[in-house]
Length: 428
Image (cartoon, rainbow, N blue to C red):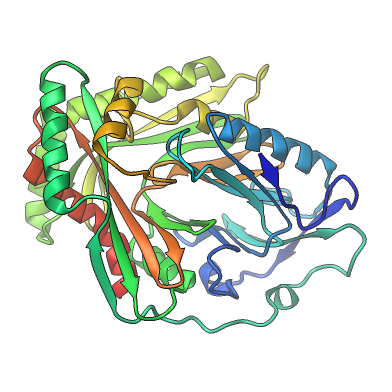
């Protein structure tokens, strides 16, 4: 584990000051710089958090990457001087994080404390500035933004195959279907990557704005070069209450409202998709059990309508055990990987996909989100996302749940539908 704070909390205490501000308008419009390494976002339906700059940071790796980051944040937050004049979830010091899907991945994990955070929740807006204690007057938004660099577009975009060609990936899906039918495993979630190359430098703000406009019901995120709009909430902890949104079972939209309603009804009756969804919900309930004094699992899923696809969805809720009181990140660590992004039984499924994907998916399908000093926070699953790998390159990801009834050609089409959000964000 390595940390690189902008000021060492052990010798120079950090002060986090939160003040109320007038409604600043579109949060994503406030981001002053195109720098993907120092831009953070967690926005849904106009509310949420955006940040820039780095006051403190830790990088972790291996099987304990999330637990190590959680411990670092507990220490760092405890050593801060906090002046919070607002006092709602998301105020005071906040850490944004993203973590690799696999413990073996070189991508590891990161928690970053932005120098500036602007938030909005239920009509209340605030500004938090983190820096050395004792410096400067009460913060202002205009001063905190500094010099603003105009947003630029990425220019012409070309897409090429990633680790596997389309044909190779389809063949790999066929291998997984054969393994499932042989009884080796019940479900495996296969990821696929595509590389986008741009004629101009990528401005993360351009991607975020397009994603937020096109997918307002998703959580639009940016942390440490990972950018996306996820429909899946891994876990939220809010004043002792826990919530998880499980998505499993997908069908593409056609653009014809009447046809989509028929397809939604078919999805809700599909034995293949209902079985896949039930496995995913069961894995979440089993993982949450040791950490909650009580929880509720819906009897049946609902159909979540997104612009490009429809999903079977279930919201699992619970109450945190007050004796152990795990943080939101600790809960995310306990839940990850769920059957929705790994498979069932999950340990064996993860082994199968490690053999058949033939790539390191990095932080795709890993936890991404934020956490406050009290441990409350929101962590999504990094889906519908891309990793900015260079000034003019982005690695895009999509995944499909493979079961015995899966058709490899149909899974290719589903992966294309799931790649559409990031393709569109780059080319619009």
